[in-house]
Image (tube, rainbow, N blue to C red; front, side, top):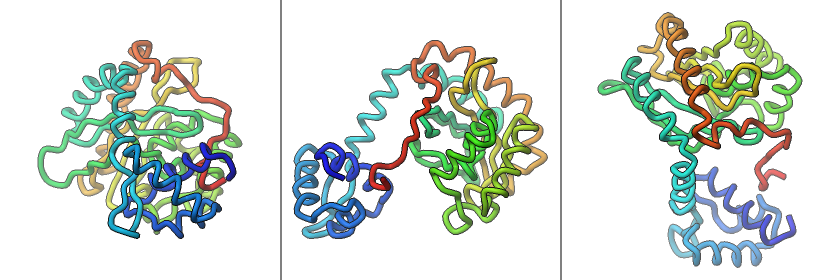
Length: 271
């Protein structure tokens, strides 16, 4: 890692994956840079409001400035204006969490949601997170639109979800993942039971116009005790209908018409 820009972006990407913060020595080691260089860049990021230190000589963490920039950008793309009314209606209808993800290069990012649960258990994750392709219903729905080799390349690049990191039913090998992927492709939807998170089930379908690359996915997720397999299967027609409506309205937002690139993206700090 040589250039100032590459090092700075590497710091931001690393800190975005460490909500508890990172000490200077650990950060420098992970980014393979001298501690003095890491300290100078962190000082600049603190000065411009992107990073703060939890205490003197303590961990470095991101501020909300990057989040604010991202939300501002989303508001300008029109994706929320296009999608939110549909997500709200589906959430009210299902009584569960509904999320929209969009394809961003070789990643799938959750950008909008609507919470239908008004009482009892609620699954309510942060937006802007990158979907784990191998074990999330959204990831599997997107990958099912690709050839096996292309899907396997993306999963290999990102890494498999493990029961320790994700749910107890997360695929433990590429062979197991491929079987799930092929079943998803045959069904036309992704149905997961405690793969992404223990105690959580979800169902997702791709969002895209016929003959074109998918622009993202729409999903319904909720506690496994409430969102059973039978209930998820009953939601398939409605989910497909809402996906078609989102695809039809996608021309109003440049983010939803972007498609996927052929560039293989990876975190800079993992390069």
